[in-house]
Image (cartoon, rainbow, N blue to C red; front, side, top):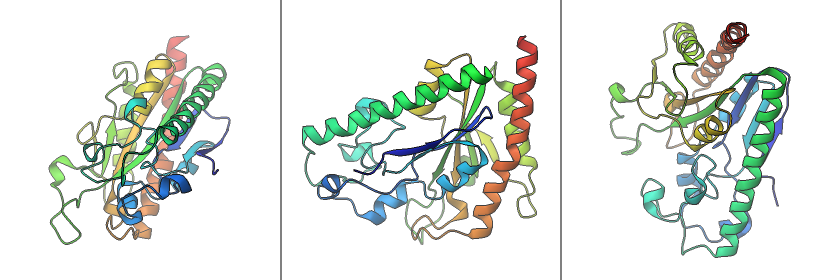
Length: 264
């Protein structure tokens, strides 16, 4: 069986995570799926794994969210009904209980690993920041349809719904400021907070278990850097997003240091 995730451990208080980059599904899952690989890929977050190299501690999930969604609560981590998955029919028929239980065992193992990583970071640094990297669609009506309104679909949506916003305000505002100030191919990015998404279960779980030490920045990048229907990237835009994220890390480290000094 293929691994559910891969992780690397570094020495800075910064982690980068790609929960939905994976496309692979286990053979016993694949034979039961009704959804096509193309439809799966459209709702996955391709290219986010490559962006995780902005941090030396990285966590990349290799399996498709259509097998197991690690950004959902445990009881909703498997899309059993179309309403769980944007109206898409995922399964030919209800998956057998043993398959579900095997997936949920991997879910539990993943969160046990996340807890271990966070405890190590907490012990080593006191406080740490996690870049929870995602992408989202805005041509949902079809490849030739009009895109969703820019009013409610920023290029970078920062989700902080489960975060102790008052305490972590310097980190949040520094990230937004630095991303907006980045020279993005001669212009500025549209970066806003909690407009489209407020963050998922992964961020909420970490904030619940590490309330005084962890700041998860749930970052949703609109798929303006690629064609969400053909999955073809615009290489220049994709790399510019990558560099904008990378450039924000130094500011986050500065704010972490200041928070540590204030708390001493």
